Length: 179
Image (cartoon, rainbow, N blue to C red; front, side, top):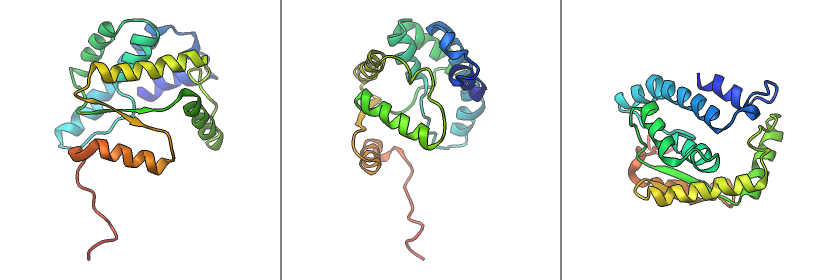
């Protein structure tokens, strides 16, 4: 379901995502989130697995709640319903100047031969609002939201991420070490 929603929101050939307002986006995202948590996340957690997710409910708080103007409290309530109250132990906000971030998106899209989506085409002011929204999220939930400087090369960013994760990830084994 999440992939189908992603196509509706981001496939420019369909032309549907750009026509939705913030509330339409949110309802689609919450339906996909509900199914993802029910079918993937909760079963994995019940097995004792560590779950790492790219963009979870906090993205809706920022994009639809703050930037699209639906309100943080309303989005938090819908997130709570969709996830059954399942919050992450930690959320990492990869902070970068919007201009640099968009340039990375464009290079990656060109390398992967993918078209950009309507979010990438939003005015620069929108992207600055998104960045400010994520920084605000870190202020609202300091017990679990940490900001990571995402400037620099991939190796430097990876080191910063691993520093923030600390003991939350299972120990890493070196496949080349030992017997």
